[in-house]
Amino acid sequence: MSTPTVTAVRGDITAQHVDAVVNAANRRMRGGGGVDGAIHRAGGPAVLADCIVRFPRGLATGDAGWTTAGDLPARWVIHTVGPNFRAGERDRTLLTSCYRRALEVADDLGARTVAFPLISSGIYGWPADDAIDAAVETLTATMCDVEEARIVAFDDGLLERLEQRLRRPPY
Ligand code: AR6
Image (cartoon, rainbow, N blue to C red; front, side, top):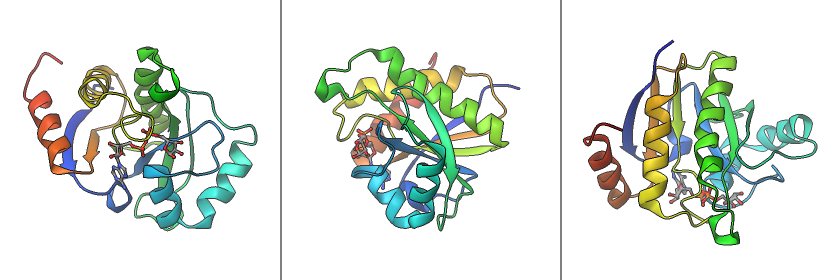
């Protein structure tokens, strides 16, 4: 066990060739927009079918769980529910918990490479710079068997900010 190497790339989370991709889901766990919509579209109906079986009552904010990745290049989807800043959920420990719990689930699965979106920073409205700090702080400090934690930025501006943050230790 050690801490993962944290990398940043620009791209689409659904195109990552990794053991597991992380979904920025919601508590209902029945799909949605943003990353969630993209994962369900690209993964196909097997992802929703598995969500219904594994999460009959949904998932709590800050928690994580897994399903098949269906037609995605990854083997598993690790779903986590970030806090909805826009709706007043502003407890930062809920956001860091998403990253920590996702790594724990990855360990349970034996996943060594895991791709993360920047959880809560889209539809849920968490300010991007603090969302980057929370991701980098938590991923660089959590002991686990994951070797690479890859943060996937959807646009060049976000990638630039992530790369700057990763060049600025201590994390
Ligand atoms: N690949 C990588 N990053 C992406 C992609 C993609 N395909 N699509 C969006 N992003 P969001 P949240 C970026 O909104 O804020 C859903 O409806 C996006 O630019 O997907 O946690 C769920 O069902 C942003 O930086 O997740 C929930 O209801 C980041 O990924 C709610 O949205 C996260 O944006 C969750 O909102």
